[in-house]
Image 1 (spheres, protein in one colour):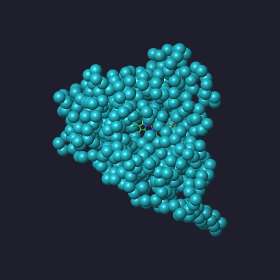
Image 2 (cartoon, helix red, strand yellow):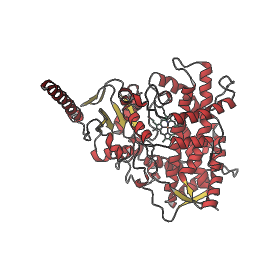
Image 3 (cartoon, helix red, strand yellow):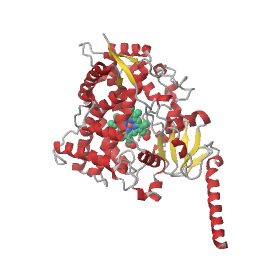
Image 4 (cartoon, protein in one colour):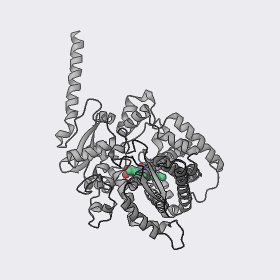
Length: 502
Ligand code: HEM
């Protein structure tokens, strides 16, 4: 009995000493930190607050270039300093090619996609998939975007006639599902016009986060080792089996309609074509282009592309509805940019030169970017500054949302002021803190395409309609952001009215 008590006491003392050491981890290194709780670290805060909002607070509360936190039992560094972010993401990118987020190896689709893929496979795949978004390929998307923005204008007309209001998130998710669906699968959808398509059914499923999926994503983003080491029996996956099975059916039907894996592909236009061509040419050493591998890329492009762009369009239109002066300026610039032929549709070269339109987009992405942080993991130990060195394997969260709300760079950060991107004092540019698409070799692969898509969608709508809020709707504010979860998404549905311009 005495022996047992002694063993228990020793074990408790050992755990206590470890816990004390862990708790002191950041203070011993002179880094301010948020007090952790045993086992969960700071993760318990996600029960109450959206991760993005927490990061925003970590910037304004501590006013320190670095803040220490604990992701479960793992110390992680929040970087609030734009110069350090620039060093980590760009100058010293070779040491930070890996994300901390990952999926267990037995999750084929979750672990093989380009977002979570580890080195050396990620670099090989990224090089090949980047060919999808070259300048020429993006210019070739002109026809697709033109056709879909026409549908968008028609759909708004139909919705206004039927309901006298439009649900922004629904409208733009239908639109981006068609566009991203065409770029990934090379298949045409009619969701923009009708609100329905087989792929739209799938993108709706992608957004469903029940409690289990929410918890799984929190663990994947903030310490997937827990699944490998302790919770392997749960067989947790980034995407539930039923979701993958549903997509597999769509995939196989598209693949068959395109002649399968063997069909001749001379000039790949979609992600599916690009991957089929890689499979045929067998150019990727040590990466088998299996069906799961292809499905993994298609799903992550859809997930990363459709909701981010739809949210940006939703928030942008909602802000515009509440500010007629910004709308007037935008309308003036866009209508003056129209071709002299009288065509209502701007050419890609012209639309890329509209500085106010870009400022409106940048201000939307500043105020409402989906992912509030950019995660990396140090491959080798890294000297952050003369007093702080982090060991290999330390997760680093670049606080991109915090930096975008820094009042010293963006005065009155809660206000929507596109003009701040037009001033030529260079403050915004020089601050390095504007990272809506991330930065460095692992930045958003779809950035140029996303910007083009946003420009065309906003310009097409603003040329045809004046937006106005519904009589009792709340003005844009933080209260519209989902309180829980990981991403910066609207809490409730946002509606506006579109009035045809004369
Ligand atoms: C407004 C729209 C979008 C925003 C704000 C956005 C933002 C981001 C951010 C912040 C990252 C992480 C970058 C980093 O770690 O440095 C990312 C990565 C990524 N995005 Fe986007 N994105 C958008 C649209 C798109 C689109 C349209 C696609 C594809 C069609 C796409 C595909 C991806 C992929 C595949 C990655 C992972 C890249 C890698 O790890 O190599 N995104 N995006």
